[in-house]
Amino acid sequence: MPAYPGNTFYIQINTTGSTYVNLGGLRTRTLSVGGEMIDITNSDSTGLWREALSTYGVRSLSVSGSGVFLDGSDINKIVTNLMVTSATQNLKIVVPGLGTFTMTAAVFTKISFAGNHNGEVTYDVTIESGGEVTFA
Image 1 (cartoon, rainbow, N blue to C red):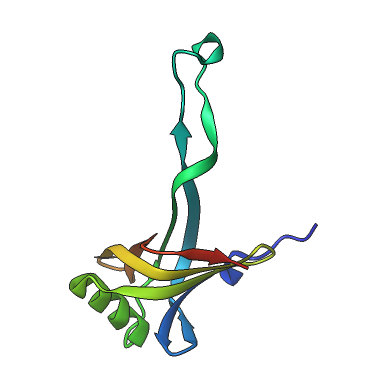
Image 2 (cartoon, rainbow, N blue to C red; image 1 turned 180 degrees about the horizontal axis):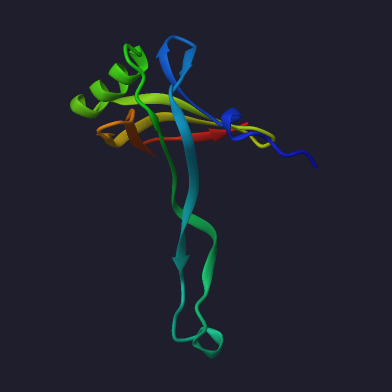
């Protein structure tokens, strides 16, 4: 079973039409897929052990990344604008060897910038699903 380098894990933002651009400068990326359990425990549950419905309630996808802020990068301006305007954006998350998650209404919930006196300017971004997510 092959391993994959981390730099082939992409977070891509839809800029126009069918064009997606990698969120640049990233050094780390984290993807979390979740689904809320539907608890149907009641007084007739065997031994009063928790029972769950065999399907999920609310499902969610969250992706975050951190990296170097790249001077003059249009994509960084797009992300910052999305945070300021609270707009949603189509997004793709490409996980090598697994597939591609496509978010139709990604919500940028956090962007932060940092810089050390003798180091590079860095940024962190957090993106949450705000609509349908597909996987292929």
